[in-house]
Amino acid sequence: MKIAVTGINNVDSPGPGVPVIRGLKDSESINAEIIGLSYDTLEPGGYMPGITDKVYLIPYPSGGIENTFERISFIHSKEKFNVLIPTLDSELYGFLKLTDRLSSLGIKTFLPTFDNLNLRAKDKLFDFCTANNIKVPKNILVSGTNDLHRISSEFEYPVVVKGIFYDAYIANNLEEVQSAFKKLASRWGLPIIIQEFIKGDEYNVVALGDGSGETIAAVPMKKTYITDKGKAWAGITIDDEYLLNLVRHAVERLKWKSGAEFEFIKDGETNQYYLVEINPRLPAWVYLAVGAGQNIPEALLKLAIGEKIKPMTEYKTGTIFIRYSWDLITDIKTFESLAVKGEKDNKSLKN
Amino acid sequence: MAKFSVPSNLAVSESGFLFVPSSGETFTLNEIGSEIFMMLKKGSEDKEIFETVVDSYDIDLYTFEKDFSDFITQLKNHKLIKEL
Image 1: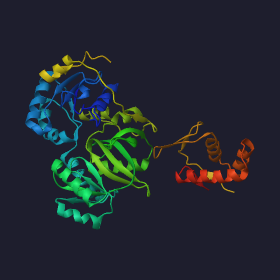
Image 2 (image 1 turned 90 degrees about the vertical axis):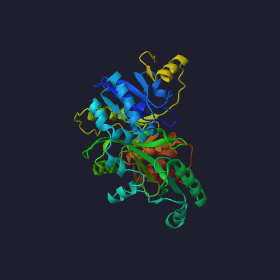
Image 3 (image 1 turned 45 degrees about the horizontal axis):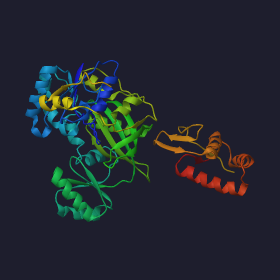
Image 4 (image 1 turned 180 degrees about the horizontal axis):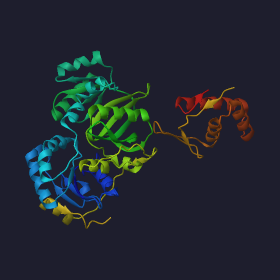
């Protein structure tokens, strides 16, 4: 089966494309042929042996959905892929708007719904959690620097200052909040989210919902090594039924469709879990779930093609992932093909 | 006389490596720490542990009782044992 996958930017803050592909390639029931969709000529997934069978450049989401659709239609006319798996937050709304048109070409997807995306948005998460008895750090939305003076009366420092789409800073006083506010507002726009800082360890859960409220897969992980960008560089699967039930409850209430990553902080003093974010796509560490016994990319693909999947509940606790970086050597001819023609055949790449 | 219990889901290897599956935390014990922890896990009382360790190692009872108390405090802080 031919499957197109985005997010093959396996860089220091990696996209989930390469681990998703690894899961698909590991599947014994799918003979996966992978078409990598790359936003840049140097996304590593387009050069790594055994990952993409062919790679095509696609326009950035900021270019608009018509450009995306035109390019995807062209690639599909050549490759006739069956399923498209977008893996990046920034492209989800665009592909969701294109779902019907992609479907008319014969391209299947399994994306979150607009409701899913809106309910878990950073400025809505607090309301969703409080309405559903899930602990969440207190937050307020601020739309101007005048509102920042509310912080000292409503929070204790430090606080977390978050952009509406990406990025977060920890601020220890009003001056640091103002500085973070300016950076985030100029980059991602308003409002800015001011969130209570919870001190504790970070736990994440990768999950897959079928859209009816059922959790098809879920694997929890403790981050054991965190980069300066807050990304997990190592992690270990844990056995915590309470945490899994929290995620199942959220999936059920959201009627979540597709993959997701639930980010929690466990308060070091009270041992309570606080849900700090729901990312609407599989995380870059999803291959840990595959290694622990739940091939979530494979299950997502099967849901996309309309197969019924039984919920997976077993996985191996104590499975560890350790990310690493590796200098891949290639040559100018290989690069040229993608740079000039916008496509590259990888079948000759050797392991 | 005190007795302790070790959480049933705690994984302990013979080399003294502890893994708490519910939190993902790991700990490493040295040889004597490992030996004491195994005795705690078996349900030995503190008096029995004192006798075994003082008989096997070059240490007096007074010093060992103090070290044992510190060790127990650390294990409790990390929720690796509970006093019964």
